[in-house]
Image 1 (cartoon, rainbow, N blue to C red):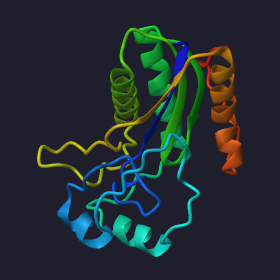
Image 2: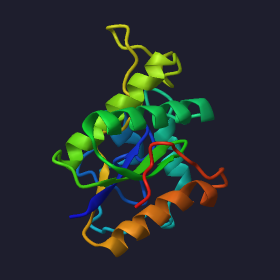
Image 3: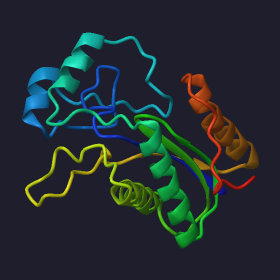
Image 4: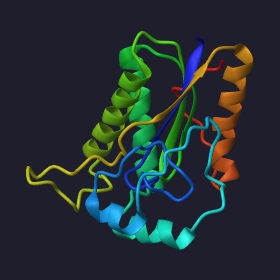
Length: 195
């Protein structure tokens, strides 16, 4: 394995019963189950984002969340990037592409001794820590009983293992193009290394 394409999402981005399909086998929140129905597990490595679906049902289910879905603004996205850059130096892993979108994050990293799950956990913690440090946590208005805001991230992540130079280059190009294809400016991060 030469690297990994890691994708993690903001709270509320893709629910376990999304009508297009999901990676979930169950819906743990009863109120979401009552509105959106059971989990919609799919077993495809391809994106289901563009599948035709019941858009109104998806919006109604999102509206039932306890907190609003996380949508990062530009300042928050910059803080997320700073957090990713800091943890990549601390844990000594190469970042070859990074795109911080309003509701999800793409990172292409080189091989590392940590598992994909541990790398994602470290990326999420570092991004959250930086937003807290800058006083711009997107869910600061919704503190838990301990006074701290809930995580701005959804559980889990998508992981694509990259086993060839061609796969690495394809993933890097995809991540680099992601912002502009969404109508945003191209992102340039000082911590991203040339592959």
